Amino acid sequence: MDLPIQLYSGSEDNFIVIGHRGASAYYPENTMSAFRAAYEMGAEMIELDILLSKDGIPVVIHDETLDRTTNGKGLVANYSLEELRKLDAGLWFGEEHAGEQIPTLEEVLEFAKGKIALNIEIKTEAVADEPSGGIEEKALNLVKKHGMEAHVLFSSFDYRAISHLKQLDVDISAALLYEKSQSAGRIPSELIENYEADAFNCSRRQFSKRWAEDTQRHNIPVFIYTVNNKRHMEKVIKRGASGIFSDKPDLLKQVVDNMWKTK
Image (cartoon, rainbow, N blue to C red; front, side, top):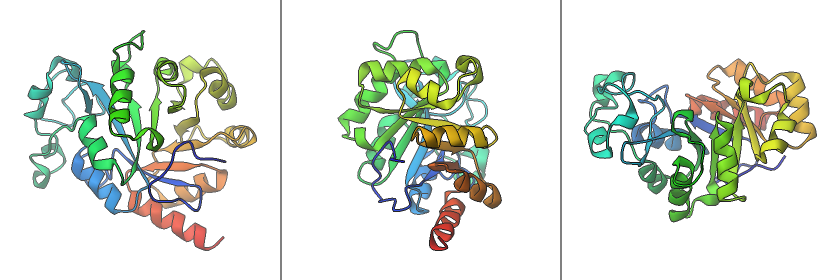
């Protein structure tokens, strides 16, 4: 099946090695050091998460609150970018990572351009009912500013975000992140058709034989999160995944290369 985006490093095997929040097994997640490491380890795409600061800037962080991955407290949305930049986003992972900052989406785009594709996950907490002026529009404008449209796959667990992106630009690539309550029993091919999405993302456990057959039959690219075990990687690849999100992109690349050689 055709991949929904262009890679900078050509993927002869039609499979994408994706660094989940960067190389987050080895570096603090969603930081520039994690992204640089994923690129150096041979990842073909980096997955990252975005929320909005109090002053409306897309920033790269997974949780709605600052408590787990920074020395700050409370909601990301209650802090301006200037205030967020003063926080330490590395110390929680180890003293040697002290001084890491929360990146902006723009910083990551500047780093990635010409090097590596991105999967930008829009967090549900930042999604509003209307697309105008929202996180989707802000992120899309930054992607276009840096000429990265062909190298970015947006995704979200909030299906409104996918609809908004397609309203803003029908040609931008977007993946549905499977969320049970919004899906109302629909299988992947039905969801992709209903929301005009370009790809389907789900967990390893959700990627059943039935779903694998459904996505293959309808030529839908499917990306699986978060797989860090070699045996699980091999099983998911054999089942027909188009790519895997892994905290260990180096291990995933090794598994893919070995499987590709033995074909």
